[in-house]
View 1 (cartoon, rainbow, N blue to C red):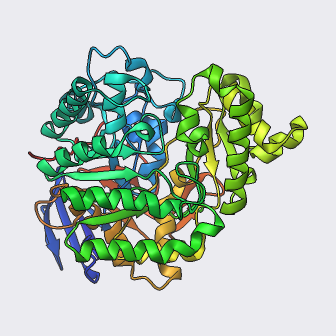
View 2 (view 1 turned 120 degrees about the vertical axis):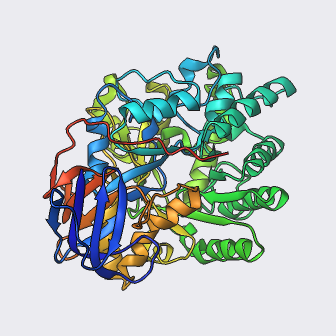
Length: 532
């Protein structure tokens, strides 16, 4: 089928100034881009006067590899398409839905507790098979990172001990196969089990492997705040300590480094924004390819154990319950909260399992008041009641000024870091309109829309080596989002699709038409494999 978009204002995804013109595409590829194009008589003609044509938005940090292949994936994927997203960079934070040993006795531990939804996960261990399934069944395009945590679990479960030589070799072999089969890189989740247990020696080996294939290493750091429970309390800024560990790896290996969801948790961390941005500038000035992604809201999704220290998580259930252990944990968490400017009132339970639905939507502080106990005791009780698996939305990650500064930094990319959770859960607002919100914020801050669009399209495609994606040019895939700049508006608060998204094309097929979702379960997505 041939389609022509007439009278667009074209933002081509490179950040170049927008120009008026037409876009002609046939089947899944763009044929011509330019003024006054002619088209075959049978072509579908869409008048785009007053509309901006942009490359389909690319979500630079997604976890939707866990959802895109489910038997009924549409409820999970539709909200992202409705906000103009056509491609996901998935497999983040050390957790990918593929990339593990097929005969691993720990397979049941691989589905991250963060992504539970009451449905069975697709058991696809090899990336080659995962990508083939994407081609057959996915509604959107998916590029995917291999999760270090997933590969590590498959050889040692959630064990906290150092991997022996045989386990290390098996883990690295699994990760290398994923890279050979088209994975975009490897992701680390150093604040989660089992990534939290990994020593620098292990991480260096992973980074060397990524460097060997010239892919990208994405990292959820061990600490994202001035004070955490990952380091001694008075050892200096924990955020900067974690960043230093990562830059040591970058400088030792030359790996291309990407900091996942750059945030500054707690008000006392906010003054360190410029320091961290300067460090990105220093790294790049030395020739080390380094960047980060971000979301527009001041909160984000995580697991309830994200503030737990690694020493506590390593303990057995019996040892965790010892009075001295509880006292030590209480003192450390109380001191951390005092020093951080972040507390239990900023932790909202978003999922707590079938038996604890009454906790959802409440902060830990509210629950403590209802239970007549201290916030610390309520927090530990929630952990125990949910087997340390509750999901949370954490606030005070940043503020409007920080978001503006990060958006306009040359090294930032835009993303959602969100997924649709099961019925009875509290949803992350980014699923409804993160990308439109970025466009709104760009207008508010005087940032040229073409620059904002590039950060959610061409810049992301270039960084992750997505060939012929993220740009509007002849030969590129026909992933196109058409929106009205005067009407674009997120409706996150109402939990509704945004206003102003008129058309979304995925590989040339209309998914949104006249602001109505029309894909209806058609698997029009493609796997985005990175060539060896």
